[in-house]
Length: 131
Image 1 (cartoon, rainbow, N blue to C red):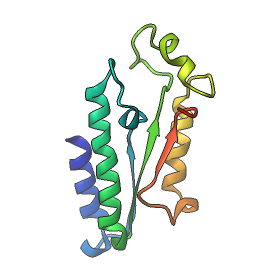
Image 2 (cartoon, rainbow, N blue to C red):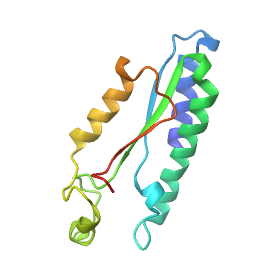
Image 3 (cartoon, helix red, strand yellow):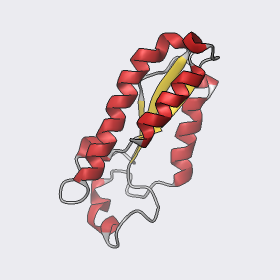
């Protein structure tokens, strides 16, 4: 529910239709939304699939109001969210053969927020090592 409330409030403040100057929303989705995460995190995957739908639909609704909406979809990123032994279980499924870093995810977010991506909306950058 949080991302829906946050994006609603952001649109109200950013929208040129409501007196704003436009802006950029970058949602954090997940590679799990398209992988399904069977036998692990299907509830998490489902919630992230909702972020995908929100990103795509909202990007079309507010494009003419000066707002771009995109998402970054991380895969296995070094963090405390993973259970012990998970890396050993899935490392063979990641073509690059390594974990991603929070910094790599952050760089994708920063790029989507910047001027160099000014003609991009409704897009997803997958930061998942090829998975």
